[in-house]
Length: 204
Image 1 (cartoon, rainbow, N blue to C red):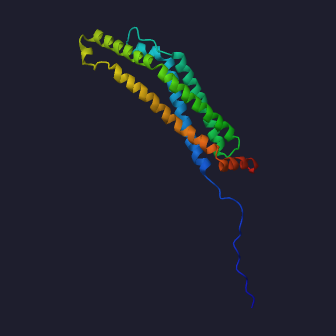
Image 2 (image 1 turned 180 degrees about the vertical axis):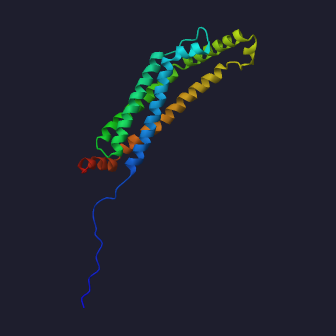
Image 3 (image 1 turned 90 degrees about the vertical axis):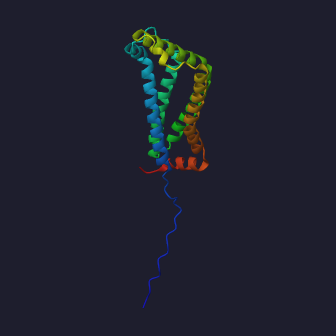
């Protein structure tokens, strides 16, 4: 009576499929969409500033300092958000071209962070002056509507406003730097670079 020998497990050299591209790609999409919305609203606020002020009934509002710089930041941030959306979609679909798009985004995003950090400190006094001018404009409006009502407002604390502006500039820079740094480290990892390059040979 013959016996069938037990089948031996088939050993292959195929690596196990990974899912990191999905996780990172989705995070990139969320980051990009939130950033795009934020910069869009920021740009819209700059464009509609005079109209909003007129609705508030404030006469002779202070001029927005560094409006050109603010507009540049808004447009640049919006463009980078679109670039990250494109790169994230390519990453999710495992297209090897995602590496070039995402590394371009990483470099440009970190450069914009440096520009924002330097620009924030260089314009810090102008920002505080703008806040103080707004405080005075609001007080004037309140006094015109009801005499003595502005005395209920807390006094403008310039030192406190300078401190808040300084730390908010640093805090925002740190927050927006975290993901680009992570993405840059990931894309320069030898194993990840090899895996991404292997996607060129995928049958779709």
